[in-house]
Length: 287
Image (cartoon, rainbow, N blue to C red; front, top):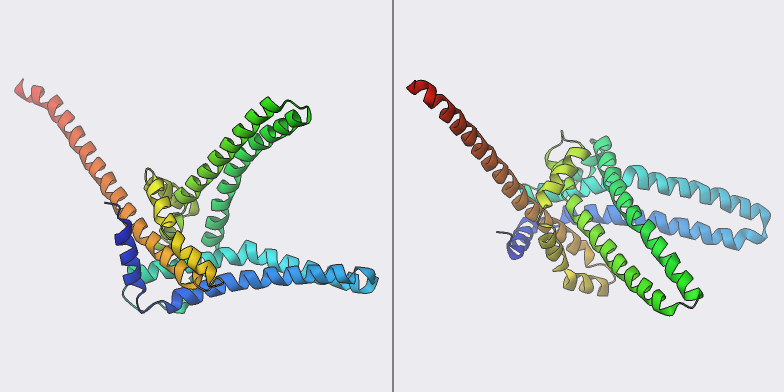
């Protein structure tokens, strides 16, 4: 039975005395991204200030281009590796009782292609689904604005209501897709030989009919999220590993349930086929 309390309890038991590596991994992943982003913003502001002086403006522009390329190079190549490394730390922490070395965080570099493929395959599908909803949303919005301009208020109100419902449906569907793809990281950490496409298919099958339960599981951390915000984000250093570990234990439960069901179906299928063959052979034996 899917039990949120049991998953949270198992997550805390996995992390007791072993918070150090997950927290350090998360800090590197978040702080490097934040530092580079702030650096880009700082150079952008300097460009604004230097715009009066052509020489300084050119230097600032070159500096901005350098950090811009460096930042997006990091997002494209290194961020996927760090994400896979953090997931790997969580998987090792929750699946073994041994001390998890900080080296596990850098294991993503050994599976660089897999990390890159998983990251961009995942976000490609999210982008395509978002685009599929965005275009009709944009079309309805333009029509609603046109109706307001032409003072057809009653029709405009209907358009705005449709737009609001459509927006809520779009957000709900994207959350559903994010949850259905979310288990692929744990699958890839456990099964190094599998690719992103296979991992995503299995993730979709595992989470089928369980997306609502997984949403409620993550939503149950809302109180801790608010407290973490009140601590200027410091609380997230403990909360994110806790949430990830909880999700991993939920994944293990769903994975085992899925494999057990598949094995049972295979056995039932074999038994049915055997029974059919027996029924065909019996009359021949009697004759």
